[in-house]
Length: 153
Image 1: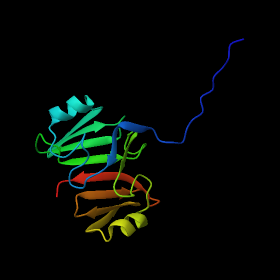
Image 2: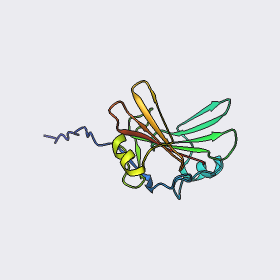
Image 3: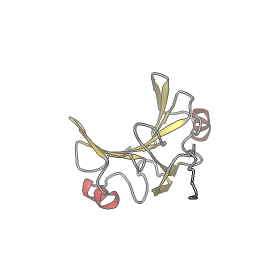
Image 4: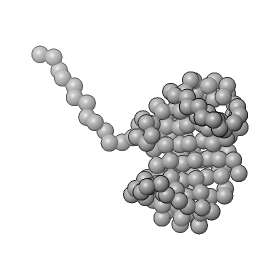
């Protein structure tokens, strides 16, 4: 009689090991940072899973790796988006952090660590915080971090 193997579903997110570490505001990570060209990103990460073109730029979406790159009106990366697994079709997440802030950190904890944001807002039940240091944090309806954005200051 053959043995049967059952796989249990894990509630833990799939973490991409390609990108991990401490984010530098206004820069990113050593392997993925603002100012990289499309060619450099393709050489480092391969072809994106999806490419979205808009009148003001192009998004490379690496859905299976947990990040997007915004090439706003040019060939160099202007914004980097890091997603919690399961957000906006991303099936993995990068193991990135800033100070003690990582995916799932509460909005209140971000304020305690970084102080008052330069701007805040909301879309429906989701909120965001923009800091002048080159970081933006987007929170789900429970106030937990789901998207971390690095931008040029």
